[in-house]
Image 1 (cartoon, rainbow over the protein chains, first blue to last red):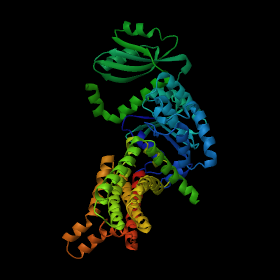
Image 2 (cartoon, rainbow over the protein chains, first blue to last red):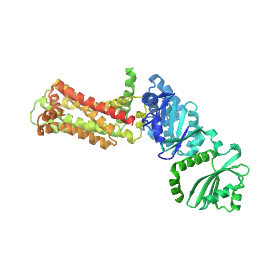
Image 3 (cartoon, chains in turn yellow, purple):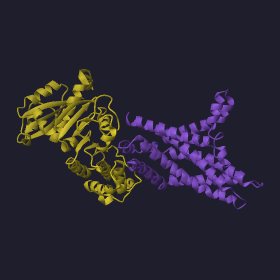
Image 4 (cartoon, chains in turn cyan, yellow):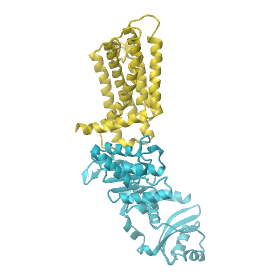
Length: 300
Length: 246
């Protein structure tokens, strides 16, 4: 499950509430249908949290640290070693078991953070910005790990990197000013943007130089090959759109735009799922800003 | 059931003690405390004029009283602010354990280190044996008094540490409370009845510690220090509970 939203939308607050670190100011927290708002211990026992930055004790060896966390979460001494080994195996950190946490690279620290979060086999795993600060190879490994973790527990990934959410989650939650504005399975979401067979289409980002977004929209609308065009922004004399085109037509788009007199600045294929999510994100953000805010943005 | 309750306390205690024993800071405090105790003992207690062993021991416990308070402040100022600055607080706050278990684990870790360092000073009263005799009961009672002072100081320090955001803040807050308690006799002398009796009774040193220095145990003094241990720990637990449920 992906949790997205702008800075200050309430993502971290929601994660804190779900982790039993805060109490909701209103509403009820249900766990398997039972209210746990006033029983935080029950909730904490079934939740694992990877905070950003990860909560670690640098002076402890990795295996000992994870075992220590297992003990804090009520795992009996007799089972602690086996569960520690299993958590380290799943996070692929067995090779650094004897190293001090403080000596590890950023990527390994994230993995140790996840290992401590899953050592007690929680039903709900909360990952706050799991890929921030990771290099590309570590990102790929982390994505694979997150998907694996999702096989045993409900994983909620909070991230401002929308491509990450698009690639690792099959359900998206979007928050805006503390309110849930989107809650839907990710694989059906594409239907909203166009009734196309997604495998045969390409998502394009189009940036045109124009001071008149109506004019730019008109040019794009005149191209029959484009489907589900949405404007993302209009600022500093440029209009930015996201659109879809069939795979066989997508090489024709640039020429068609130029022929219609458009000043084309950027035309690029974007990661389809990330592009869709970004589009949704912008759309909700724009709605919540209201007409006044929107006007201000356009002036800027 | 009891073992389950004690296990997280033991885990927190174990980690804190290991962290302190593996750090330069921990060993620095240990060495510094012994050095100050030794220097003060040789300067003020072991004088050239002939004295009774009991007087020398009384002076020794007076010195230990002061350095124990200082040690308590230094040991407790790190307890929570350090976790906050290292962003590791979520490990404790998000664990399915009660707030009092977190507080007790932290408190006992500071007290264990304090007791270990204090016990290492036992060679100083033994030096008196080279020149005369000492009363072992006076030594025992004196150390009991110092332990009670350490317990109360660590409890107050734990409470202040749970409130403070930085180590400096925690140290200043704890020092402030300790100074206020130590100045009870002064405030008492400046106050009119019945407040003077109240302030005199709260005095951390004059009204309660002097007896221990000379080998006398007053149950009222023991109750005073125990109360001054329990109350701040209870407040600290409430503070932790509030923070976890904010």
